[in-house]
Image (tube, rainbow, N blue to C red):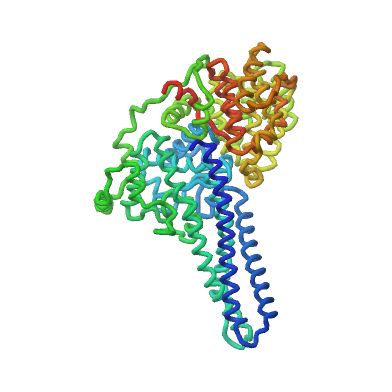
Amino acid sequence: MNFFERQAAAHRNSARLVVLFGLAVAGIVFAIDFLAFLVYGGGASAEPGEIGALLVFTTVLTLGVIGLGSLYRVASLRGGGEPVALQLGGTPIAADTTDFNLRRLRNVVEEIAIASGVPVPKIYVLEHEAGINAFAAGYTPSDAVIAVTRGALDRLNRDELQGVIAHEFSHILNGDMRLNIRLMGVLFGILMIGLIGRKILQHGRFGGRNKGAGAILVAALIAMVVGYVGLFFGRMIKAGVSRQREQLADASAVQFTRQTTGLAGALKKIGGVEEGSRLNERDDAEEVSHMLFGDGVGFSGLFATHPPLIERIQALEPQFRAGDLEALQGKWIANPPNGLEEDAHMGLVGTTHARLPSEGASFAVTPPMIVAQVARPAADDYRRADAIADRIPDALRVLAGRRDMVMPLLLGLLLEDDARLQSLQREEIAARMGMGLAQHAAELRREHLAGLHPALRLPLASIAFPVLRLRPRPELDVFLDTVHATVHTDGRVSLFEYCLGRLLQVQVRESLDPTRHVRFGRNKLSRVRSEVATLLCVVAQCGHESPESAQRAYLAGIQRVLPQDHLPYMPRKERALALDPVWGPLDALDPLAKQSVVEGLVATVGHDGSVNVAEAELLRTICAALHCPLPPMLERSAGA
């Protein structure tokens, strides 16, 4: 399946989750009604009306407790992935950390984010967890976090760490995170009744002359019994939703990191070291067990959220046997593995970095090629990410990690090189954020950003994004207003700068209020014909000086998206600014309809048979704004 097909499958899984949740709730209601009938309504003296009233009361009370429990947990997760990491005791890693082990992890995450075409997520370490484990959590890539245990940092070498992080990025890219965090919310309601019963039994007083003590005790025992019913359903739902996606994530990680040894090595160490993948906080671990890299609780059989460890290893190395794992266990009991020592032993030298294409280079692409690459980075994308990370000047990387400089840096990317236009933009920035920040942005543009390779602009913004998210919300609101004003200064903004500004706004808004913006699209192409035509027309218009060639490019794209409709080429006087109304409806398209839009964009941009670097970066920016992240190496299929 490609990205769009997996998004459609994730949509179906969400519907499946609703059905399973409904069945679980029905089972719990039936169990409570039955037990209440046996305890209170089963006597010979009970009247049918009294029994009916009792069952209605218990049904309404049960539904209310489950509903309120789910709503409470969903509300507590409104912040996205960060509350989950903090709940498990996570410690954030600073962008400017000098700890070698933490720097190694941050470099791996940044490179994989660049290769995936998504913002760099926040990174956490579970310092008190000696087991080897990790997870990704959040609603969208803009609010995602990746957390790894201290055991993973200490035990895994760099290749193995890459394999684990690539596995977690697969969950980010395929929409699994969204389903995982919703699953946490709804399942809490199912477990709520059992939790209430347990708390009553732990803290209640049932002795003395309290006449209601007996009834309270019986009610608490009923809640405990029903709690086990809820626990059964919860574990079954998590196991059913999770297992297959873990297999897909393993396969994606191998495709991405270009070798099986890293991921297989991490899985072997989980099976070989004493701590395995267990987490110490078992209650919290069970709640998040479906989103962990390895089984953190110890479930097996029907309740297993992951395929058996030996099966996961054999899928990567078919010749591996259970006896081999036992041999590793014997070896590592006496001498536990140390990832940093293994890195030093291997040398980590001689890595071949891909070279960035020259700014004038062009390459052949087709719509099916690009669609196949959306959210599916491959080995050459990782090598390109290495090259991109190496080519970003150290001075810019330092600025991207500074809270006080991240805003002028990102605004500097949006400034025009034309002196008159830039002067107007600086006035807009100064009016909202002060003259000092406006001058900083202009200095950064002049000294560092004006000659920056086009392929480095989005990755630089990606690296800066986690630091931007740390600013207070009022400052971020002002920043969004400033970005909008900067790109709309006089209506003559370039299409790339307009789209970059739009992308920054989308990512910041999503990180501020993840649940408001997360959604599976439902729109059909028939409802957005005007928006599709506007987007393709502006892209064609801005990419061609000749009206005739722009018209041919537009027609190539519109034929790909809406072949049955006759939508003429109508140049927009506002050019890029005409795109303001199109983003919402297009982003709300169902996944397979969005695939058609991406195909139309590729056909428009590459109608002459080739795409240059600037056009490729424009295509990546538009796709990112539509939540269809493209890896940095669009030309890879051309040589395949």
